[in-house]
Each structure stands twice: as C-alpha cells, then as structure tokens.
Length: 212
Image (cartoon, rainbow, N blue to C red):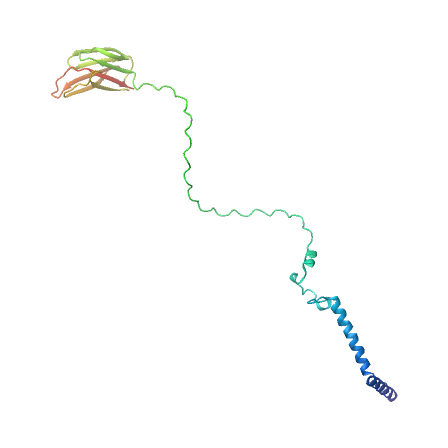
C-alpha cells in the first residue's frame, strides 16, 4: 500500500515538473485549438444564428423559421371535406321601408266591345191630354173615360214592376200645381190619376214607364 502511494506521488511530481517547464507551449496549443473551434463555428453558422445543440426541442415557433423553412413545412392541399349540416333558420328581419312609386305604365290596347245591354224599360207610353197614344212600347190598350183618369194595359205581367209617370210631352213640360198618382189593376194595367192643388181632377199630357 505504501509502495503505491509513493509511486503516485512520484508521477504527480513528474507531471508538475513537465507542466512547469512547458507551460508556455501548452498554453499556446490550447489557444490554437480553441481558436480553431471558434473559427469553425463562425464559418458554419452565420450571424444571429444558433445550431442544433443550442436549440431546446419544441422551443422554436413558426416565426423563428425562415421563409424557406416555413414553405417546406406546408403540405399539399387535402381533399375537400363533406358539407356540414344546414344551420337553424334565423329570425325574420324587420320589414323594409316601402319603395318609391313606379312610373305610370303605358295605356293598354282598347278591349273588345261588350254585348249591348238590355234597355232600362221595354214598357212605356206617351199620351196626349185626351188619351191618345203618341209613343208606345208594350201597351195593348189606353183609355180615358173621365177627367184626369187614364188606364194603360200592357202585354205582360207587371206585378213585380214599378211605375213612373211625369206630366209633359216633347213640346215641353207642364206649368202649374199638379199631382200624378199611379196604381195597378189586375196583373197588367196601370191607372194614372192627375189632379191639381185643390184635388180637382185635370187632363194633362204625360209619359209612363214601367220598370221590371
């Protein structure tokens, strides 16, 4: 055991003696090797750059990479996925304001003329004061038996009709105070009575129309 200790001490002494005599040469060698490593590192890495050994796995972000590296990371566009389900219908919006009135359109072509309408009345007469028929449509008999009383018989049932009499003829109206009263006898005869303001029967020309 003592022999080994003595031997170690001898070796350490020789090593120290060697370093003491050659420390300048050893320092120059260390400096040369360090400068070579530094120069090699500068030659491989550009300024503001780091190597693989300086990067912690998972620490780099996309913005840390060059444009070339980012482009290389992009894969081809994948197939288009299926369309998603339709969304729920939204709420109905508020009614918009009424638009401006449009311009008036052109007048259309005139339509086909319609069929002639029926006459307002097919039953009418005109009588002189003495009971003579001057105009007639549909009457079969006109009589004047007493003053102010006339009877006109038509060729059809006038039960559901109305009768309108007015004094006067084509030559003009009748002046003075008078009244005309109409009534029906049987189903086809109209009675006309004319009297003045004193209820005296008088003879006057008149026209009678029957509306059904």
